[in-house]
Length: 388
Ligand SMILES: *Cc1c(COP(=O)(O)O)cnc(C)c1O
Image 1 (spheres, rainbow, N blue to C red):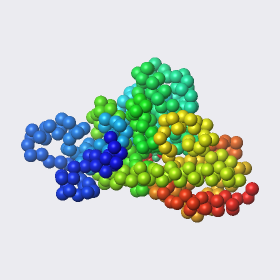
Image 2: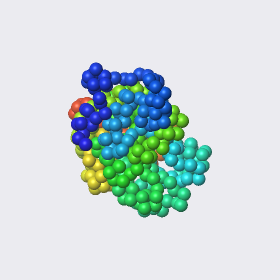
Image 3: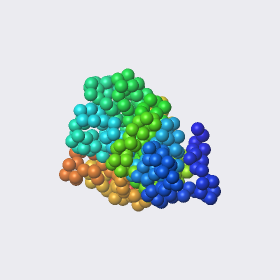
Image 4: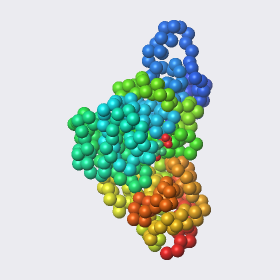
């Protein structure tokens, strides 16, 4: 399906709402019926009918159609956050005694889900270095029900070979799920590579304006309707119609925003690599990236998150650099219009800083929609203030 058609037209039936170009926010909790027969029909298929907005809603339906089509999936479910889009499918599809193989260095709350929440319900998890297929093979047990991936992750960007892992999982009857927030379906289409479920934090690139928290999962109708019937409805992590409307608006400019973020990141990472005060720059589309070949093989483009380290790195030096930035905001999250910086040292107690741990030295930058030169000037200014 044509990308422009999906973003501008798919799912929108304008004659239903006065030919308004922008869809309405159908701000209602419930829907009424003219006959018991119609009422009963809606009750029996809440996955598709408009009955109650914890399940379905016309504004949410427009969004679901677009997000499913972007992934080349049969359907999509949308959630009040990205973590709900990760947790609820797993809670729905696994049971006590089941085992998960998860790639290491995945999103912090994903790790907490697998190490703290699910074990309370008898589900265990093994974390593996995802850069080698054999590590997944070695970790699989008879009770393994899910292989969970995040490629790339959003701090050190290690990739997994999605097609190879999907093939391995299929041969063992194991379900696969990926967090595809970094690439979005525009730059990586895991379902086409054989992955079963694709989750995204829609808070990031899909929303794109740092004003909504939301999540999505796409996959087959069979899997999604199973998730919907009990856990989606029963845990109640649905999305508000207002959020769905903001995401539909975000989608209108998704390809433009991604392209801008991608192009600026190319320029900024190349310039930083040449800077005397910078040690390493880590971004999947840099020729120096360890898995650059795989990145170009399975990704059509690259998100605007990258990390770098300073030469002679120290806690004080990283702090001085970040504090000296004038235009880049220091904040969590990413995917909005504004460029952001987060040093790994902000996520640990200052006393825990280990000078020999390279992950502690990482400074993550998200490249937003500002002019690349404006951002480079800000970074160069902060770098030049550092003592060698
Ligand atoms: C932000 C993020 C999430 C969680 O999404 P929320 O919308 O914050 O719940 C999951 N995975 C990745 C990679 C993220 O960046």
